[in-house]
Image (cartoon, rainbow, N blue to C red; front, side, top):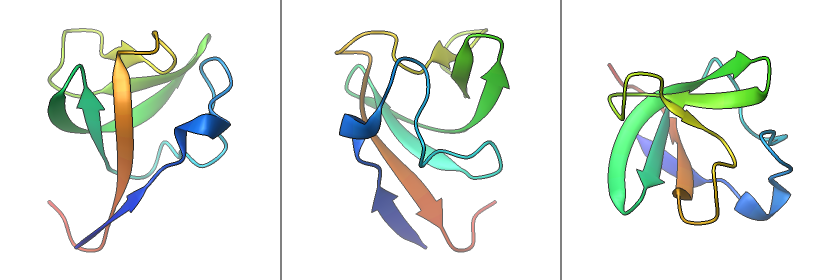
Length: 76
């Protein structure tokens, strides 16, 4: 398994050209790490994991999502 860091400077609102709804990601949310997937909502991408009932909107604020890594290779 490998981790590929996503460049957050490409983030535009709630969209990012390198994120897919089919892939698994490791995301630093307020300093804690979560594994999950992004889903497409009417406002853009939403990170769905065990962080809250409704997940977290991509672009929720400068301190919300600090880093994103795509998980490449075998994973559950």
